[in-house]
Length: 468
Image 1: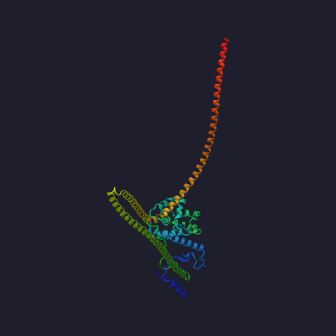
Image 2 (image 1 turned 135 degrees about the horizontal axis):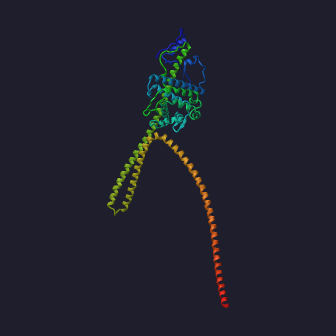
Image 3 (image 1 turned 90 degrees about the horizontal axis):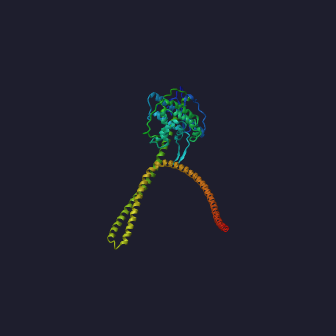
């Protein structure tokens, strides 16, 4: 850390006071740091004028979002440029312990989180950039292998950890720029996850995707099985882009004073951001402590219940042993008190059954105690599975309703066919009865004709005999 004094031949009292206030200040080489809202804006001194700009309206959300996009784009430029230069100077394969590479992933995480829509879950609101990254496999088939590898990693339990693993695998594959370009070109799909003025929906996102092409010259190798990506805190280390000493490009008068004051404001803002991060982490720790206290109380209640059941089981054992001894005494005098023996056996059977029930309840309470310890870990997974099962059951219900409708239609058709056949059968029976009556009449007529023929024959024989 070095003291900076403005380069001026005739310092004025105002200049001396400002310079004295900026003593012991970190200097950002070739960059001007300005504060707008809650974000830091890094700009090259060659690209801007040192005259003060008119103060904008900080309450305008569009202005704040635009400023955030510009800040993130500038940080991405710094991170990518520094990573490429340091990697080329290093001349070897980079691993996960390389600090500039870690900072690059932190910056990319902030870029992907900018403007994310909060999704409500049963645990509260959740913002995760894993959802947009999952869309890449639909746009670029080559990314399906990365997505499948991320889902198969056993140590990842949160969407944030899966998103971080996806970024590392894409960088190792040297396809990160291609995947980001394909994702940014489909703003109709991104609108489901991002606000309209988010970085991924604006021109800054396309610029960052173009800058990522330069990372294809880097060879990276990561081993993510032993790395805890879920609990890492993604904080940008701005000190990596600062260095001590005088500026390589001096400015005179108010320009240098403005740069010095901006640097001082930058350090104060950085401290404020770090304080906010510490407060957030402390809030998370408090929430975890409350949850742990609640689980401890529930566990204590379960332990008390188990102790009560054990005492009750001991009492039942004592009563059953007493009843058993009583029953043995009763068996010696079986002839005298047979009815009492029967009642004792019945009571012993009931007490034995009660003991078995108490033992079963004790085992159930022990199982519930073990399940309670695993419930918090499996709750989210169970909810997802139940939702899938509910969708499948609804589909099956729709199929059953359609099948029921079809069967009812077929049943109506078959009932009509049976009715028609029964009517036809009755008509056939009537016709059969009529034909049977006709046949009987014809048989009777035939008999009458036979009789007449016999009569005529006999008469003819008689006439013949008379004639002879």
